Image (spheres, rainbow, N blue to C red):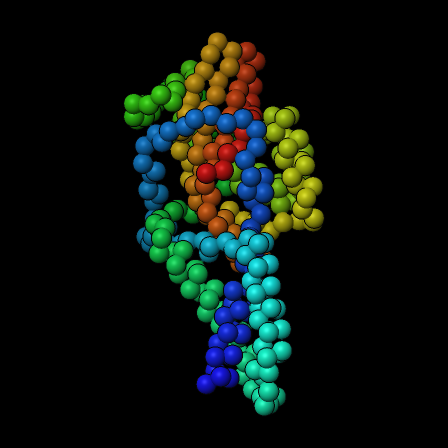
Length: 284
C-alpha cells in the first residue's frame, strides 16, 4: 500500500510539472499602440462549407505559463527529496523504478489530454471555409471601391460612421489576407514588410518585441474571420477598428490557440490613395 501511494504521488507531481508550449503570433500576444472603445457590429457570418463538409476545430489547451511549470517542477523535486529521505523507496527493485517511469510518462500524456478536453468543452466550436490567397496590393486593405454599404450596427456610443466610398466587405476580406501576410513576416523576422503596414510608433514597439525572439518562428494562421467594430472620419482622416477571431498553431510544437484581437487603423484622407496603417493592436 505504501509503495502504491508513493507511485501515485510521483506520477501526480510529474504531470503537474509538465510545461505546455505556446505559439508565437504577431506582437507576441501583447497589446501595443493606440486603443479605442469598440462594440460588436453584428453576429459573425457563417462561412460556406468546404467540399460539402463543415469541419470543426478543437479549442486551445489551457496555458500554464512559466510559473506553472516552475512551481510544478519544484513540487516534483521537493516530493522526490522527501521520499528519498523518508525511505519510501527502500526495498524497491530496478523493475519497480522502470514501471514508475513508464506510468509517469503515461500520466503526462493523460493529463495533457484531459486539459485539452476541458478547454474544448468550455468554448464553442465553429466551421470555417478554406483560405483563399490574397488578390489585393500588399499595403491596401480595400480590394474595390464600391458605394458605402449598410452597417447593421446597433445603437451604441461607439462611432460607426463609414468614410465616403468605403467598401466594408472588400476591406474586411483584405484584412483577413493581410493578417496572414503579417504573421508570415513576423515568423521570418521580415521587419521591412511589417513596416509597410504599421505606423512608425507601432513599428518601433513591434521591432523591440521581435528582437526578444531568436530565429524563424513557426506560427501558422489556421483560419481567421473579421468584423468591423468601430468606424469614424473627419475632413482629412479616417479610423476603423477590425476584430479578428480564429485559430493559429505552432507547426513544430503542434500547439493551437485562439485569435482574439482588434486592430485599430488610420488613413490620411488629405493624400490621394493613401494606405491604411495599423496604429494599435489590442488583445482581448
